[in-house]
Length: 212
Image 1 (cartoon, one colour):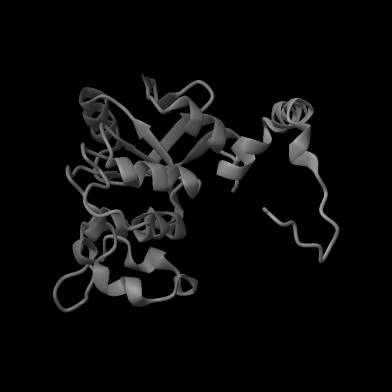
Image 2 (cartoon, helix red, strand yellow):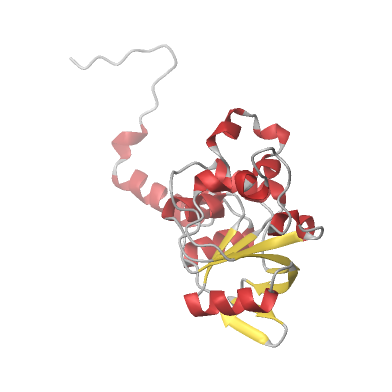
């Protein structure tokens, strides 16, 4: 995954609470292979009317929305089912960060595993950021190392689990997180082998050991 240290890009305000995974990507689109690009399905039923035409005024239909890297929303973002495709839709659209007061637990975990930063802010700060952005995409600076979000003269803190922060800063997955302890793991294996030498018996190929 591509590491995230800072993000300087446009952010889209989405002043909605309880945006669930079925809204992020309706189930009928999940039969499509990801190779088609799930970004086109992101918030599809909020972006389009019943005839499939884009709804004027919806933030993702703004001409500059395609350049945005951050989405700012209200509480309980990503609630609902555990579908990882909801994160795929955000990432394929181009988002690297979602800012909200709270997230669905599984959604947040899936986000980190796909290089998407779930930045948790207070409800007050979420409203302040939404007000600062207004009704159009606006510039936002995110510093993951300092855990700060800035827009103009406004600066607010955000929280994220330390393990998730490490993964995103380095672009690591779960295997990479284990590899950082490779020396300690090897030391343990060597010491365990020394204490239990009978575990190190090498059986010649083709030989069957009888258990009596």
